[in-house]
Structures are given as C-alpha cells and as structure tokens.
Length: 115
Image 1 (cartoon, rainbow, N blue to C red):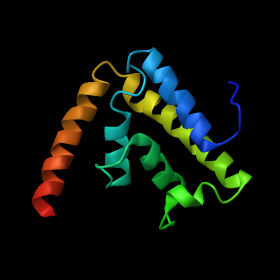
Image 2 (cartoon, rainbow, N blue to C red):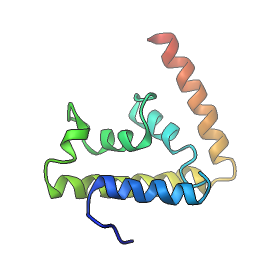
Image 3 (tube, one colour):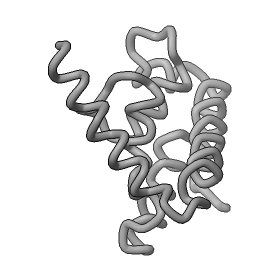
Image 4 (cartoon, rainbow, N blue to C red):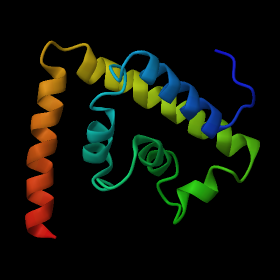
C-alpha cells in the first residue's frame, strides 16, 4: 500500500476510499463492533473509535495521534490490527454480520436504559 504520507488520517482515508470503492461492503458493521469493544462511543465514527483503542488513557485521542511520528505509526498499526481482528471474528463467519448487528442492538438498548 502506498500512502502519500505516513499518518493515521492518510491510512484512514485509504480504508474509507477502499470501502467506498467496494460499495460499503468492507467496513460494514466495523463501527458497531468497535463500539461494543470500546464500551462507548456510539456517537463516533470508526475512525474516532480506533483512536480510542490506540490511546485508551488519553483525554483527547485526536490530539494524541499527532504527537509524533511514532504515535501516528501506532495508530496506523492499531487500525490494521483491528481490521484484521474484525475480519477474523466477524467477516469470516457466515452469520457474522447478523450477529454483530443483533448484539449492537442489544448493546444500545442496555446502555440507553441504564444511562
């Protein structure tokens, strides 16, 4: 993969572009899977949720990613690690997407009632 610059934003844009070229079939359910994994962030895009995973102790992951070349590289590595995990855990199963959306619906109901 060639990126014009080695930044999380460029890598995320690459994935978003690939997803669009595949008519949304690559990342479908990825955000919902991440929300349940993180335990919050149902108002965020997957790009923001990945940063929450990459920088779990940061008060502002959007700033943390830009701290250095190493933090940018870390965020990129986490993005592709999460995509691989998602592919293994969800996309490789016959009913994986259905299971994610059903679980996400239950997660939403549980967290709306208790919040």
